[in-house]
Each structure stands twice: as structure tokens, then as C-alpha cells.
Length: 440
Image 1 (cartoon, rainbow, N blue to C red):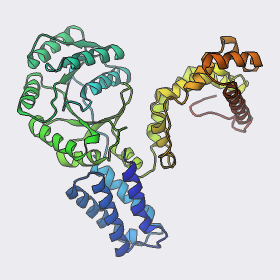
Image 2 (image 1 turned 135 degrees about the vertical axis):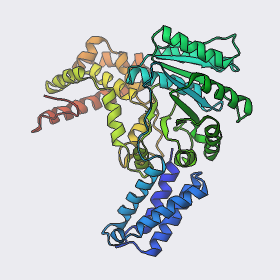
Image 3 (image 1 turned 180 degrees about the vertical axis):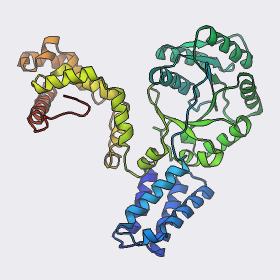
Image 4 (image 1 turned 45 degrees about the horizontal axis):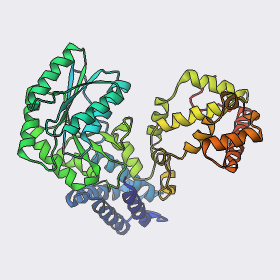
């Protein structure tokens, strides 16, 4: 997401490269290119113009005119304005009721039901809640089946009434069920249509009136661009929802919805989602998204993802093994699996400043580690714990068991030894080669 916009904004800032100071001419050229970049990203012309007018007003200030590095200051101005355009700061997600009731609305195909499962996973594992999913889509049988599968995957309960065609009754009965089972969060997945229509709007409005939800989240497919913003306005006029969820951020989207939706409906984006995996749901931070758009990466989110997988006890054990030069194949496999839990590899690398641009045309498959995992899985427990035990005959067996050539196995063994040598060198450094998160 935002790749084209990032490149065009970078090109716009080149107007100021090498300039000693900002003047009316290069401000005008830069602002024009920024406006064009936003419109190409499917941002409404009125919003794009208002945005660039604000950037221009700030850029002509005395402090900027006299700046040593006008290009960097223009980037900072644009970053601040992008952050403000997308909401300014993290929005509060209210789950304080007992039970707290969350109503999910949106068009069919927006990723609404998948998001419902992801939200249950987020609330259970990160907020310590006990959610109950409610299947209130009475028109699409597959929606109930899908939600049932998601509930099983997350390990939460689901309430459904397959024969009942009254969504309001189902929602009210689900609340009774939640109270009886001491569930403190109820997530109601409502019906969607291919387009906004009166029947759908009335039904979800009736559910809202009956259950008085704590939060109403509108789920929108980010790939639909400006259409998503128009649909959000129609839903908000009827529901007065509390927040927006942008799904499919990993798709081929220009970013117009993320940049325009807060301005249009005056409701914050609360979550962003990508892919089908249930752990690919993130709280939306406008400042971090602005940094990513401008190619600055997002180290804060990367560190948070790493910390979420961090096990202090295991880290201390690993540190001791590294200090004794006893790091083995099982340790390596464990670390690979920890990295994979953090999310899409290319997205993670894109959070590192400067790396996103370098790898934009590189195809990094999430299955890139499968070959290594297959080789380690083909080893016996003894071989995993004792890398030096791998004789030529053992390597031949590992190659056959993992479906790899012997040359690939040898190449991996060589890389593993080089990594161990590097760890040994770090261990001899003055600070003891301390790894991030490890303590003495």
C-alpha cells in the first residue's frame, strides 16, 4: 500500500534538493506535485487542495525560508499534515462495558466477517477479554459457517440461530447468552450487501437501537478507494458509527481511502487489517502511517511486534547458549518461527527505514523459510542439538528427507556456521555482544 504515492511524494521533494532556501517558485512546484500525487492516490480533489494549501501556508513561514535544509523541513511539514489528515493520534477503542457490545457493519465482500474473527483474537489475546461472536447475517448461510470456523480457530464461543430470520432477536438473545456465560465482549457480525440499500440500513439501524452498542465499527475495503469513502458517508449518516476499519491493506490499493475517510466522515480509523491470518490486525496510528507513506519506515510498530513474541525466560536461555557457543539448529528453528509469527516478511522489512524502497520490486515470499525448516525437520533430535555431528551420510539423508539437493544442504550448513562465528565475535565484544531485549 502507498508505494506509488510514496514514490511520487519523493519525486515532489526533489524540487527542493540542493536548494539553499525555500522560495515562492520551488514551493509552488513542490506543492503542485504533492497535490497531483494525492489525486493520483484517489484522494478527493477538494481534500487534496485543502491539504496542499495548508502545506504551502506553513512552508512560506519565516523559519522555513531561512532554514539550512528546506527539503527536510518540507518533508516534516507534509508528515505533520498527513498525520493530522488521518486523525492526528490513536483513537480510543472502548470496551469498558460488561458486557461491551461491538456492532460490525459494512458491505458484503469488505472483509467484515474475517475482521470479526480477527477482533475476537485481538481482544482475547492482547486485552484479556472473553468475547462471544454473534452471527447476525441471516441472508448468507456461508457467513454463519465462516464465523463458526473463525471462532474455532480463535478459541471463542459463537452464538447463532440458523432458522431465525430476525436479526434483532438474534442479537438480543445473544446478549442473554453472553451474560449467562460471563462473556464480557459481544461482537455482532451483521449482514452486508453488494451496494448500499434501504433494507440493509434499516436492519443494522434496528440492531443498533435494540442493543445500544459500545462501539460501531464500519469495515471498508481499502482497495475500493474513493468509493469506500462515499460508502462510509452513507453508513455514517444512518448509523453514526464510532470508528472505521480498513481491510486488505496488503492489496493493490492507492491509499485514497486511508487519507480521505477521516476528513469526510469525521470519524477515526481504529484498526487496519491485511491478509487472512487472524493475527494480522493492527491498531491504527496516524503518525506511524504518515512515516511509512514518506518512506521513513515504522520502527515503533516493528519493535512492538517483536516484543509481542518475546519470551524473557526463553531469551535468557538462548543468551546463555550463545555465550557458550552452543547455539544449535533447534534454536535457529525456534527463532525462525518467532519471526514468522510477527507477520508478512516483506511488510516487516518495509518498516525498517530505507529498506521499503530497496525491496519494492523484490518478491519476498512468506514461504522463503520453508526449505530451511524442512532441512532442520529432517534431522534427528541429536543432530539438531549437535551441528558438528553432520557427516556426509547424514547430510545425504537430510537432503533426501527435505526434498533438497546436497548442495543446498551444504550451503545452509555453511551459512549456519558463519552465523555462529558472528555470534561468537559479538560475544567477545566489550559489551558482551548483548542482544536486544536480553539482560545480564
